Image (tube, rainbow over all chains, first blue to last red):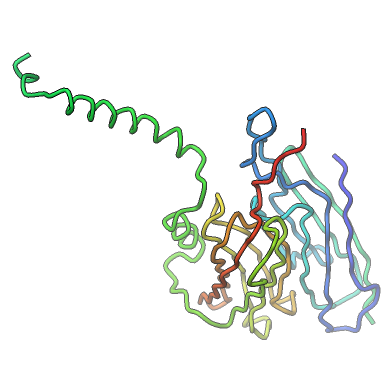
Length: 107
Length: 160
């Protein structure tokens, strides 16, 4: 399953600065509580968890419930401790899995 | 047959109707329309355990009146230095009247630098939101906001 993810991480930062990270991924986040035109319930299809790792160490983790709006969006923060890779991982129903990466240079 | 002699027609119909009603109730409750206060309380106690939840430190930023419950911007911030010895471990958001009491759970650490998270949520109807933050020392702090929703989430018609 393909999904478009947008990630906003500053390219460079000063050591020790708190940087803001924004992520957005396209996903319907079908709650499982709605009914289709034929009266049949629409099965749940949501992203269940999202995590962010800074050079392999988890700095932000979250569990999502159907109450999260479609195209889940997150803004959170991290301390720019060293240059490296910030990776993002979404996992959801029906085998949904997306991994993205961003590089950051810390001076 | 002796037992049924005092049974009037009215009593019989009343009983039969009651039985039919009780038979119908499980069908109705298969899909809860709203998280009851009990499910909300149990969802909160699942997270905080025996710890006492105090009001303060947490600030939930959510518009007091929203037109569309499908996307409600929500920001939760906690006043905390976020050092390696004193940081926010997790933030949980609960609602009162969506089908499920949980909205989102977030795990943070000292490397987060700032205890602030923003996202967008769905609200089924006008209701109260509660955010609970668990600190590294085990204490729990909360904030509650009421949101008025004029168009609810999940109820719009689907296009064929």
